[in-house]
Image 1 (spheres, each protein chain N blue to C red):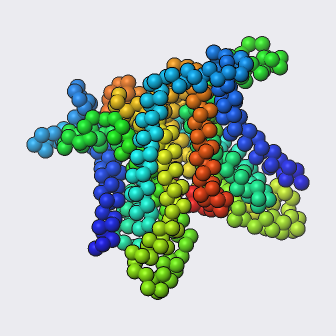
Image 2 (image 1 turned 30 degrees about the vertical axis):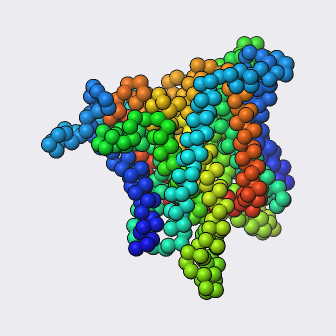
Image 3 (image 1 turned 180 degrees about the horizontal axis):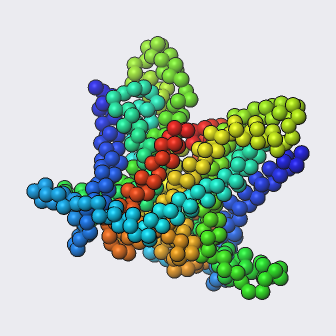
Amino acid sequence: MRRWLVLFPAWVWLLGFVAAPTVILLGIALGSSAEGVPPFRWPIGPGFAWQGGFGNFATLFEDEFYRDSLWRAVRLAASTAALTLLLGFPMAFAIARARSGWRAPLLALVLLPFWTGFLLRMGAFIGLLRDQGLVNAALIGLGFIQEPLQLLYTEGAMLAGMVHAYLPFAVLPLYATLSRLDPMLEQAAADLGAGPVAAFLTVTLPLALPGVVAAFLLVFIPAAGEFVIPELLGPSDALPVGRVLWQEFFQNRDWPMAAALAIALLALLIVPIRLFQRTS
Amino acid sequence: MRRVRLVPCLLAAGLVFLWAPVLLLVGFAFSADRIPFQWGGFSLRWFTTLAANERLIEAAWLSLRVAAGAATLATLIGGVAGFALARWGAFRGRALFGALIGATLVLPEVVTGLAMLLLFVTLEAAIGWPAGRGALTVLLAHATLGAAYVAVVVQARLAGNERMLEEAAMDLGAGPAAAFRTITLPLMAPALAAGWLLAFTLSFDDLVIASFVSGPAGTTLPVLVFSALRLGLTPEINALGAIILALAALCVGLAVLLMRARWLEGGGEGG
């Protein structure tokens, strides 16, 4: 009974600010947009008359623009996660195998940029990559090119920003797994005649697989809803679902459509999320 | 042999990739040139312009207050939740309780932001609270996100310590309240501090959720910086970056002193 009392505020908070918004989101996705403040009609009208429907979801599946936005989000999230792993795995491996006094400072160096203002780092990317930016100036100065290259507002700039932002999320779980592996296992494989590549592929990688899966999902899940990085660094036609949802809400003021997009994004992520919760 | 050398090189490359934009940003904050990321001699002029920018100072002050309030609220709620999850075993509704905390951690920001806004709009229509949107709604939304993170950090910390210490205290005659005060609370303290800092950072750095739930009266620093970045980079933003980096370094230094190196090693497992 006393426990109930202690937990009561936390329960009220979680039900009120986590469960209720999700239910309301679903409700409004079934409603329709309308003139007025707020600009939508509930699916259940006065006198409990049903006035909702799946119209928003039908539009979402029929209109290529919305369908594409979901597909683009999956592609963006998957390529971000893959690139992050490609860079993050050797980093985590090197930290795990560094001398014990070096590990904590190296790990701190990976995590620290996380605390330095995400938007300001994206601003730095803009400064580096734009036409008069540092990278172009350096390439011209070194005589590699005469005219500045279009670097900003490209897929490449967007991916670089994504990898930059999500790298710490991948290194942490990979480090946690790799630091628990016994280096003697690789040694044993080498003694039994495996070359370094074979030892890595047959011993280290399979043992690290849970960490690899966790890292992939930990990047994939938030990256699928990303809005800021495609908006600031990506081409104007790179419209993953996060950016489309934002437009529907802020520019078109179509709240029910934005809610339907949010529900679609959730539906898309339900499998990765369940997988992630099982691995961790 | 080759792999042994390749791997540290990749670590170095990764660290350069992570740090180069940050360090260049700070370096060029001291450039006199009007064009950002162009060297025009050493100058502090952009720090002076920054100090005179009232809208920015106002937004920074609002962000600091919202982040401090949200982090404190998050630590209170998340601390209790994490303690219950770590120590109370299978209490009634535990599965739902854990799922709600887990959901908060994994929902994409755009979904959380939109859902929170729709809640506030619905609440205002139904009971008239919270009236309008601004600092309060941003604080409530950030506290919700922060509480989930605090709960996970506290739970991870307590899971590492067997409850034997508390049982020993009670065997020696301490009541449950005294055992909690003298044993559990000191055990939780580093996790509470780390959780508070994490919740503060999440709030201070958040653009997406704040954009949804803040009205015109709730322009936080990231909201202002984002609209500035959309119009184009200015050297003032570099100066702001240098200041935030200095403050962040100070906070992290403090946190490391609090947690010592041991926490960083264990932080990997705690996630």
